[in-house]
Image (cartoon, rainbow, N blue to C red; front, side, top):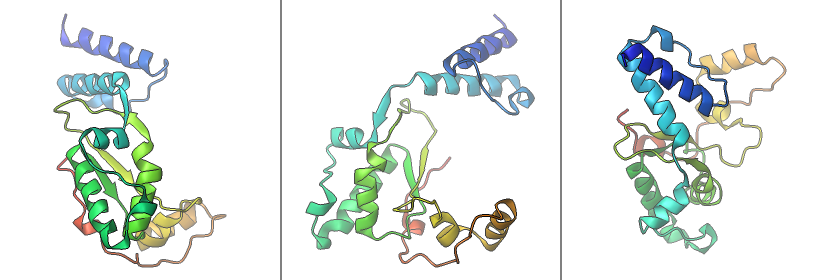
Amino acid sequence: MDQHQRSERLAAEARRLAGGDMNSFGIDNLPPDIAEQFLQRVIAFETAPMITDFAQLTADGVELPDPEAVPDAKIRAVLWRVIVALSKHQVFLERTSHLSDRELYSVLWHDVLREEHAALREGDTGAWHVDIPGDDAQATNYLTFYASDRERLRWREDFPDVQVPPHRDPAYDRDAALPGSDV
């Protein structure tokens, strides 16, 4: 079987796994070997078992106490133990500086760590990047704390009916110290 036939077979399998509809913008412009690798990763992702980071960290022996049970003097250590443990599984947090250590750990414990996602294969170079929204139902944290002036202006142009909140500096300075992927 030549590379073109392999790629066609992989594309058909990826479409089947995606329910018949798959958008793969630009894949036709990739070199055939790169397109084939991409399709193999899509199939691996779509067929991977689902896991939660809570279960994965617990299996690793990481203690995940209820946030309400952690004394103020220990919350920072508990949070950073979780952040480092997540990074070992290629899970990286982003945009967290608007939350205190306790608020961030609470969001992780109640929500983020319990979300199901596809397990990365052993040796996979991919990563999960988790943007931490905090307690903001309207998703304005990005605009308030992290968007540049240019991004805020573009938002106003693209969504004139949406009120862009005034910029505020995040209350905490954690993001620069967060582990990040090499990808």
